[in-house]
Length: 80
Image (cartoon, rainbow, N blue to C red; front, side, top):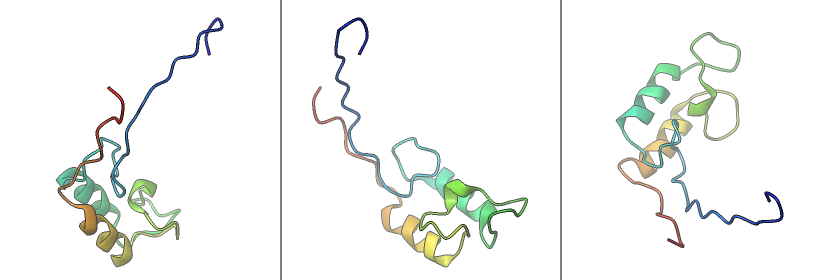
């Protein structure tokens, strides 16, 4: 709210497993996951964006989650 004015913004829905938050699950997301694969929190190559299930490690579980949405984009905004 700015000066008594309410600004509503519709962001749509982002596709899960999108490492770089571009609303598409692409090869870029795969590369982010690949570069962290087998790493855990605290290790030099670990990138928390690739850890989808919250266990602080990038494993085959995270790969399977990314694979389930690979090539897909998120929903466009609901209200134009």
